[in-house]
Length: 143
Image (cartoon, rainbow, N blue to C red; front, side, top):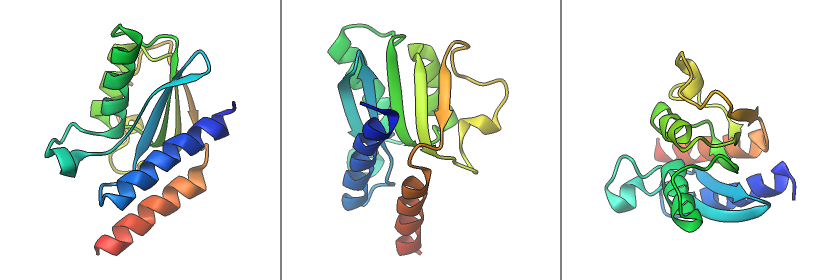
């Protein structure tokens, strides 16, 4: 499967968040060509500010794989991770991160030095337009 295919799965998670009136961010973790975890934002449902899609997906992947390091895995997420999530991605030693839309206000790339592991590869802009549109639609409906 391609980056586009896996991002579509993350996007489907974002749609689930949207339907649950959560900020529409979805994530999947892939290891050896297999999705080992998927999640979407659940901060409202769980009453937990740390229940971001990436955090939930990282925890589920570590549980599924039986270890805290995800150095052979790729995280696909519809929105650029925040600094909290980027820190968790760094600590998990994620091999690769692929994200759709940039987050101009809270994305981790606004901070230096990067909290990601130095060996982590980053790919941006996969399904960027779809991810941006879903986020814009969500916040437009909130206003």
